[in-house]
Structures are given as structure tokens and as C-alpha cells.
Length: 132
Image 1 (cartoon, helix red, strand yellow):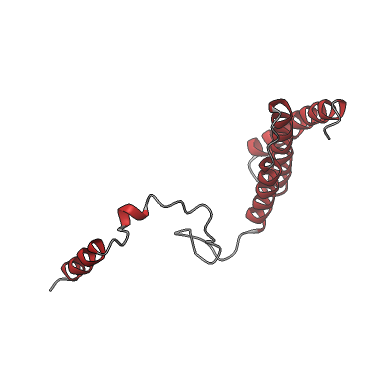
Image 2 (cartoon, rainbow, N blue to C red):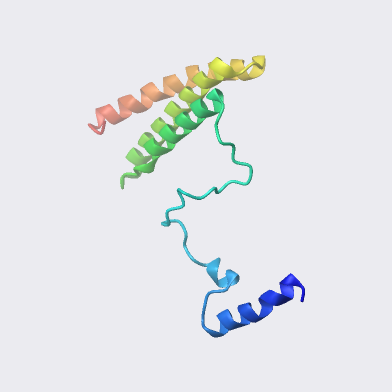
């Protein structure tokens, strides 16, 4: 008996007993399940390079800062964009430390300058409203 055919009776038995089939399982919400012990990536590397770790830290910090979304849409925008811009500055600083390409380094420098100007504007807006 071929391996695929050997599974057919088991699949029929599970279906008859009301067990979830793979198609049914796809509808299950897995977002609240703890997958911390699972290797979720196909080509996951055991260790990150120093640059990758620095980018990951910046990315994680940015997303954490964007996670708390106030009910006030104006404040939500300003606080979310503030965290986003701070993340852009931090990633640009990582790029300046590790990037070799002149264009990438030039863009990182310009991103830092532009984002810092807008960060100051957002911080002033929030401060004027007693939010931050």
C-alpha cells in the first residue's frame, strides 16, 4: 500500500468523528496561541548578525511604541507617527553604522535630519495639549 493511501482510512475516521480536518483548522484563530517554542521560519538562522540584531531592536521598539492607540484620532496619529519617526531615526543610525553603500548612507543621513524636524513638531503638538 502506498503511504498516501494508508492515510485515507484515518482521514475518513477522523472526519466521521467530527475531528477538524486541515481545511477546517485553517479557520481557527491562532493569534492568541503561544508559538514561542516553535520554529516559525523556514530558513531561520540561529543567530543574527550584529547589524540584523540592531535593526531588529529598532523595529521592535518602534512597533511597541505604536501599539498603544488612543481613542482620540489626532493623538493616535501624532503618537503613532512619533514612534514611527523615532524608529526611522534609529534604523538610519544603524544604517550609518553598518551600511557600506554611499547612497544608502546618504539617504540615512537625510532621513535623520527630516525625521528629527518632524519629531520636534509632533512633540510640541503633544506637549501643547498636555498629552506627553
